[in-house]
Image 1 (cartoon, rainbow, N blue to C red):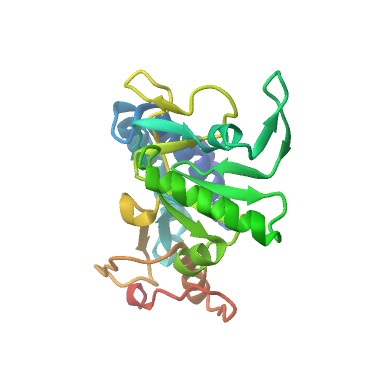
Image 2 (tube, rainbow, N blue to C red):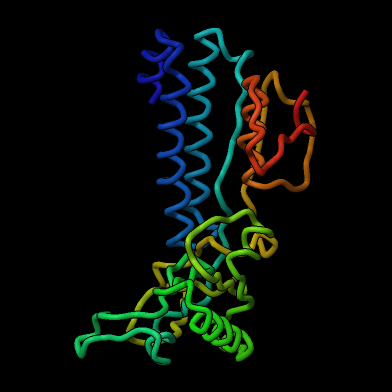
Length: 265
């Protein structure tokens, strides 16, 4: 890594592009994969963080050598947090059981009225005919009944409009099912609806939960655009782009998020 950056300093204009690509891959491999297979806190994650710190040190040294370090804004970001799991539940298996998905004798899907796509600790629910008010009401009531059963770890059913208003999420699904912060959504069509996840499981942690339930993305900024010691207790992912635009001397009037002025000079 250091040899690469020693060459990169000869062309300072390419440093930012190279840094973003390398760090994105490095962090994904060293940290996120360790979390998914081993839980939120484990030796692999700690080693990954240490390695990332060393790589970031290489980046800083390269920028100092290029004479651009003091003029550079650094921002460390993540797109989500992670939480440990105790079980996984297949909403699709329930949809098969209750007649919303049709399978061949061999267990392959050949027709569906409703399908759930896993988002980790949540699922986006799609209708084959989202404009059908009868189907829409039937599925909404059905999902609510699963929540009320209190068995599957489902805690809330959001409509598309509710999710857009609360979290700024835009996707072509009809409903969004949240879980309790320890239940992952599987997409299997057959087999057990619920599977416990023990210490020997290869699937120990994931994302996709409601932000209020646990660890959230980080935003750490340092550089000439940022106030030293400024702290903001909470923000949204959609606030990042307007903030970066402001640092670059641009505006994003069309954005739903806001510039995080509290962090900037």
